[in-house]
Length: 435
Ligand code: ADP
Figure: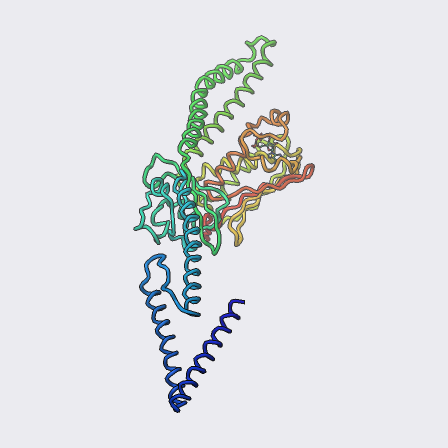
């Protein structure tokens, strides 16, 4: 509507100019000159308005209103002015939103860090400076692995699987324990949240220390009790027959307690460090041979048929003692939870994915609902059955810990009544092939 009006006014003005020129031509008799003169004047006026607009656009201060324009130029000045005002208002609102977001993240106690797809720092809040020691602006654009130099962080970041959190000491203060949580967003960029979990870690540490200390302290009295019971039972003929059975039971239960304490102490030891101290290639085939013969002894009169198939050239980097306790837990469980004379097969092999150990039995099996919780401490499918087999309920928890320390994982598949297969998977980087 406005456009239309302006177009009309413009045409009217042009016609008026032409009429003026014609009149001048009529008076002077020089039509061509009069027209040229009139048009030159008109062009000059437009140029002067354009120059005013240009001057205003270049030299204007913040929010300075445009000079008064005439006719269409005045309209153009006003429209540009309004557009600029609107732009300014939108920018102001956006800035306010950004300020609020920055203020709230700055007030967070947790560190928030934005990294690009390469892992270079883009933005971080104040807590990131106190927790990780990032310095603004020097560290902007730096690779995060240069600033958090812990080897486990590097490994965690490079493998790109951020499903689990990572816990590490702070790079600037050993006493601070930090939990790293990374999420990918947008164009493979990373959002990293870092929480201070020092207190939780201390509580966890207290719990571990307590269990380790109690287990350690209980060991000595228990050794004395079992020692005396053993000596007494060595001279059965001197014991009142009424006391024989209770004493045998005492000895059996004391043995169970000893196993429990040993398992608790082993778990405490496994939890104390992230990785085993030694990582020599272990000859798994020989280790399995020795465990299999122990398992055959454990089976005794139950005469399980143990089949061993192990690749003799395939070794595994790690601690032999830890691997022995993990593998023997799996193999002994197969013996404990399978019927007499049933077959148990043990296989150690490698493929493109890495090295694998499978222990397969044709025993009682485990219902699917128990599988996710099986590696929890003291978790038992059936407590009456467990006390019958003399288990501690810590075996699979030990297996899980040992595998974690060897970068492996445990996979359990089972069909009740048919049997179970416990498979340990190790990455190819842990395996060593020798001919
Ligand atoms: P436990 O010392 O009681 O054997 P574990 O941690 O080794 O404790 O095992 C936890 C539970 O898992 C056991 O109580 C048992 O019910 C079940 N389980 C373990 N291995 C087998 C298996 N091969 N077949 C059936 N059940 C098993």
